[in-house]
Image 1 (cartoon, one colour):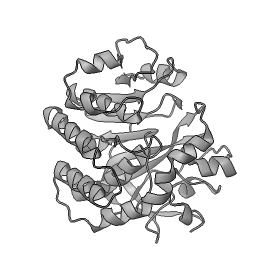
Image 2 (cartoon, one colour):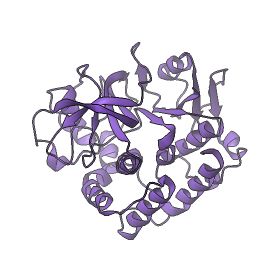
Image 3 (cartoon, one colour):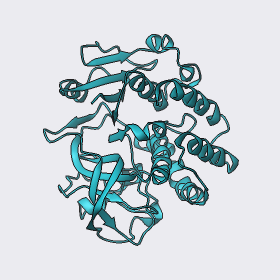
Length: 326
């Protein structure tokens, strides 16, 4: 199986990148930006500088903004061009445990919840904690999450958790900021009709879901992967796929952040999540991933939830996608 790990960074080579580079059978692609410090390529690591990216011939390279997390889209396309069958999304400040591995894309256990928005952290801990992108008005709804066995279902995306400094929002960090180690509970899926934010920290994407990897380029850094995740899990249902969650297989030694700047960048998360999910639920979609993705963004633009400029980068993504994804 051709497996790729995609990372973007402006920092020197981190211990996390070095550990993933030593993973047998994985190809690491590090996407540079204008502020990036060069990282030496190796037999298992390809560093794509801005100059390298300009030589790839991708339509997206010319329209994707610099100094934005969406530059990572170029790494996804590069992996597809080189035959990727699985793409793993992570960041340079995440370090894999020895237990880190690729799970089979199948699961026989689901979350049981009466709520539309599921705080998956409650399945793995009793601490008061919620994932970035979870509606703030709902953080005190429900206390625990149950699960039950089901006939096996196909998983399109596995979201793994992260110990130590997990992916939470600035409100949590400003108000609580407690480090957490999650329980090692069995993997679970969400059923159709239930949503939970997913991020780019510890996430495996099967080949069927590659079109949904697109990170929007006109949103903030702190919202781009959250918006992508909500769109992806809605579109999974049209392929009879599910979103799955595993316990923590990485831990984060978080890069330095200015929390109030994070808060400003997350305002879109706090204000737009519920309207976006409501819109997603109202759409009549097909089983065709590319047309579905286009339909979603057209609707988001029509409802003023993303900029019309987003359609420029999306069209470039889809143009390149047709070249590399069967």
